[in-house]
Length: 477
Ligand code: BES
Ligand code: MN
Ligand code: ZN
Image (cartoon, rainbow, N blue to C red):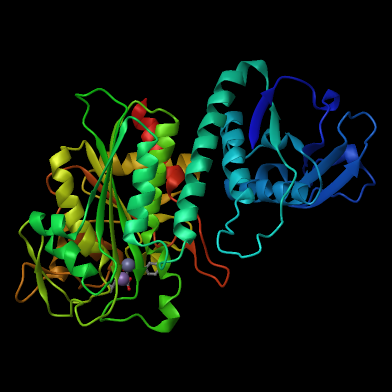
């Protein structure tokens, strides 16, 4: 898809389809038409007098002052799906001219690029007959005043990079666990890294993990036929002296729960337990596409959580890379076990910040639903920056407390800590990780609610790629 900008007047532009927003409380131009401007209503007109466009798509935006970011996103989707049913190759898109809270024109254009891309996303790698829902659409053009040209061009560039990255994340997320194994993720990462000369990929297998003493990470993969992998991607886009930002992703390619087997009602969709891994990988891809002047280390920790004669059992005690011992209260709390060793491993990079991203707890869905990821951090300025990046991209996150009092929940009778305990599931999960991150400024994003849709029609959302990319863009400034 091409995204273009132009200075000009809508009436005079030759295009296949001109998209015009219409408000319900300002419908004077279409008096007596079947269009009231009601939110998401559409009317497709052909050869409208006074317009050079072949088609004009009117799109209802509701009342002028009531358009939120969420509604704006729905309109983008509505526009794309309506145009897809025509044979229009080009859209001249005036949707960003609506007022949406206090968002700027470049913001609305960037958001349009990101979410038009999302609306066009398809995943049919595993259909024997590739569905021919081919659409003709090839380009979007935005009309902008001259003064905004540079900002809009930059916004489009960022929108395209974020869009590409989200598509990559979704591809990996939607690929099922029998194909998308830890080695498959490692291969995908190393193939990508080879194409970029300032990216280095290192893959550690189970023997390497054993040498490093990663007893918690290894424990999770014991029941699986698929070897666990620790995948490290190092991007050097900044000065040599600049400390890297480390992004750590949970990459459980399938989470059965292990010996504490999940009930069948909760097991479907557990191929999405690698969305953290997919999103940190994708955020790096966006950063590389945008050539951000940063040093970034991505650590993907990947394993499969299976029940088996060799699997860890409840009550087992494992020794982590840090030396701390952990009693396994529940084999289904495997995310924190793989992450704690990955976090300790990060120390060698002397990172500026460490952000881990994980579908860690069902509890975060209870707390925040699908609107926001859960954020917990040992460094308030870092948490603030992540909240800001989330608000900016409308890929929001919400902070929960990480008070020391919660640590008591993790007490173990025989080991240094248990891997479960206490009532506030999301906070307990983060409290566990906090014990392995005392040496750096760290934040944890629990994305179980936002990373995938859990209905009959389930799919990976590519979140929180926008938030993470925005955070990196902000840090590059
Ligand atoms: N991967 C799950 C969390 C999850 C649940 C993600 C639902 C997406 C949707 C995680 O490994 C898990 O099983 N967590 C347990 C922790 C519990 C045993 C303390 C949970 O949330 O039930
Ligand atoms: Mn689990
Ligand atoms: Zn899990």
